[in-house]
Amino acid sequence: MKYAFFKTCLDSKLIGRKKLISVRKAAALLRISTSGYYQWLKVDRYHRHGVHHSDAELLCHVRSVISRCGKQVPGVMRLYPALRQQGLSVGFKRLRRLLRSNGIFHRYHRKYVATTDSNHNLARLPNLIDRQFNRYAINQAWCGDITYIPTDEGWLFMASVLDLASRCLVGYSFDSTMKTSLVMDALRMAIANEHPAPGLIFHSDQGSQYCSHVFQEFLLRQGISGSMSERGQCWDNAPAESFWATLKRETLPLSGCFSSRKEAQDTVTRWISLQWNSAPFTAGDAIPLSSQIKGAGLVIRAFLSRFEIPRPRPSSIR
Image (cartoon, rainbow, N blue to C red):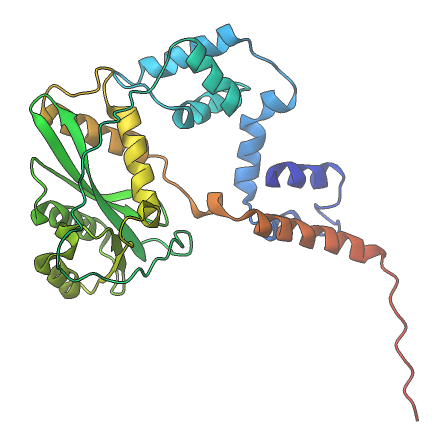
């Protein structure tokens, strides 16, 4: 939407050199980058010129992308940008319909396993994040959580530390049990990788591992402020929950279970480095629509102001 409006203004010669407003200033008002606009022109050229690809052609490209992913089946969110980068015109709904009609599905593991033990008498911290996940800069707020990965040898538990600004996984750890050391190892890895400044907020659920005295004392020694979700409110830690869903969809084999804990750990580690952290989330993707409309309104207002008739100044009364 932003890039399309920006292109319309360029085509109509409202902005540009020696025009009403410069290209750089117009891009700043719309909160877009000029390099991102030209990349959009390059990737979206087939779609804008009306080139239509048949389902058979798209299916061949989809199978080619899936074959490079090994045993995992990537989801629509991963297939869509990969196909668009190849210059293919395809939408989310069409791609989802194409996958379903050809029997290409994710492996959803729906068996519920409780990983949060909130039935304890340990101290609980207030919710400092309050679901405002997009108002922090890099290394100002992290969130953590624990999940399970099924293997033939038993559960493999994984703790994560996610940066709310970049959505990069800055720390993680694996273990066969859910001890406090599991979450502490993940946080130690994140601190060693990022070296955050004092005042960092670490958000988690009310699990006994995060509420333990050992973990809370570790946060105090590191100058980190603790924050916790409300009990039973998984939406308070939505970025971590969304990360787990994507990880399991794209790493679990078609059988739904890894053969060993080592295989699971190697596969997940490889996916984190090659897939998740290679294309991190950017804060610009989460700009509210109201802000986008406001930026577009500033450009339009600057254009209309060119044709406004100046009002005469009132004469001074003597």
